[in-house]
Image (cartoon, rainbow, N blue to C red; front, top):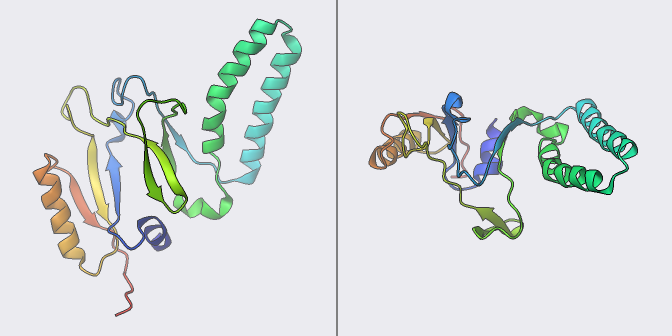
Length: 187
């Protein structure tokens, strides 16, 4: 767990957010033109192999049973849309302690809202998503439930400032907790 804070948080402040799960699939939660899927990452190589073999079998069976060019074209088009989701659900077994879930929203390369940010990999493309509820108790807000503040030399101050920030942005009800993990500094 500590390694995740170090790797993903780097030398900056790091946070882990918890979203009210029963609201994540509410209609209209995300931008309507950008549907998303919540998937659990699969680390087990045996399961990964079964998934890949199953997908290939469906593709081969369909193509061998349907000789109409139009049917094959429709199937391949649909397959190309779902293939990235299968690929994004697979991760090397050495990362299994992460127990990761991914919220996937696929966009095309010609997406008008595409932006770029610097990263360790060079310029990384991204798209702003509106993660706000359209109605209900979180209307106009993201359904945040809790925030964990990463390891810090000043854990109490980091938690207090996070609470103050959330309150100032209209999220005063969100529970804020320190990660509870020790921080080793080179002082």
